[in-house]
Amino acid sequence: MIGNSQGRLQDRRPLSIIDIGSNSIRLVIYEGIARSPTILFNEKMLAGLGRGIVTTGKLDPDAVKRAVEEFRRFRALSEQAGAEQFFVIATAAAREAQNGMDFIHRAEEILGTQIRVLSGREEAYYSALGVISGFHPANGIAGDLGGGSLELVDISGETIGDGITLPLGGLRLQDMSKSSPATATRIARKELTRAKLLEAGQGRPFYAVGGTWRNLARLHMNTIDYPLAVMHHYEMGVESSAAFLKQVVRGDLDKIRGIERVSKSRRALLPYGAAVLQEIIAAQKPSKIIISALGVREGFLYSLLSPEEQRSDPLISASEELALLRARSVNHAHELAEWTGSAFQAFGVDETEDEARYRRAACLLADIGWRAHPEYRGTQSLNIIAHASFIGVDHPGRAFIALANMFRHEGVFDEAISPQMRALATPRLLERARLLGAVLRVVYLFSASMPGVIPTLKWETRPGGGLALVIPRLHAALNGERPAGRLAQLSRLTGRNLELVVGD
Image (cartoon, rainbow, N blue to C red; front, side, top):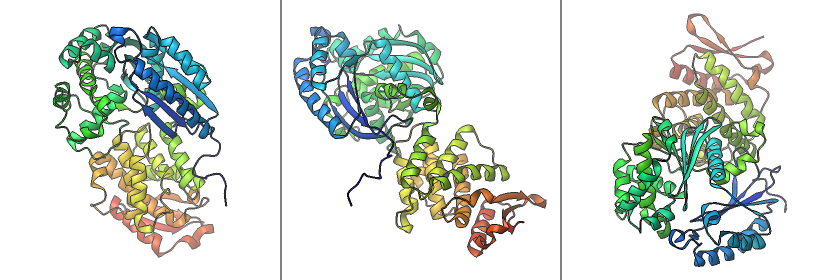
């Protein structure tokens, strides 16, 4: 039978965004406008439009020719993917070059749509929105390093504060310094004295946006044998990354593991990105460096959402969507999310706001592996969660969600389960993941993964600190040896006296 794929959300309308930067040009086709956007197709070319602009004042002619030819392909790809909306934005090189508008007009003819050339202020604004959309919440200084410019902006929650655009993009800095990272360091130090907002960032995170910094972070992961190759919300310690950044600025790249995976054109800009980051660290004195996979494009997409949609939780939104696509029952997943909150209260487990969010997400995702072989449902669930393109969650939180689902399938007393995820989770989160997994192992035996029963199950306090899980008489037939055994495991884990009883 031929029909529409059920692997996509049927109410979404695809849209394309082309981002014309000073170094790269990227086409991203999204499944639709959403709080946690999903990418249908993603392609980039490292055109290098801004190469040589410092000396010539013009866009690189070879890069212009290559870009114009590629625009035809990008338009065709957008049409092939069924994109119903088509946006094109351009940044530093296009707005500053003498022949920038000529290039834009040619591109508009080929693409068949108007191109929005962002001012430095607009570029900083959309970059800030990208960071706001990706963290829950963001609070620090965001820096978007492109090929032509660096945008710095202060972010506190959903509030965008002071911002500045500086001529410190990788290609521009390479040209200005005549390919000398040492000279580039001095230029960056001087330019950053104009960024007074960095003083307000002392002791707060610095959010690093842009391809050069993402590649630096990936290499840093390799250097320290980091257990999770997920870029968004990867954190680099200021002190622990100092020697690594110095090595990159020196140009001593060949000895860094994974350098062969970085394209040669991007590799050449790494020392300049590292030099700028070093000087930002010196000027701001941030608490840590956090990598954001979201920037101008995602900020522009976020601006298309309604205020209500912008306020929604991106982690919960993405988890609900994955449950809709992969779980046996979305309603059952929502019941779990509500009921486990009451269960944690009954057990006297206090939760921070983020811990409650992570528990809810884990429940929404608790059934995404059901189509796998029973022996591998836990492993598949863990792998999907660990590597999903979630936003609004840090890596320890991601580890909690993944481990809770692994424990739910594999049992809570196996100490060999996923040492990589265990290394990321804090002791507190590991303890709570084990508890949540144990609770899920009990309640799934009553629900058969279908909605309707879970809300009727209640915890009642018993004398001496014990707890009873009360099954309504209507569902008494669901009681049995297997649920009692699972409850005994939960009792062993918590050190509480637990019993199953049938109520009125």
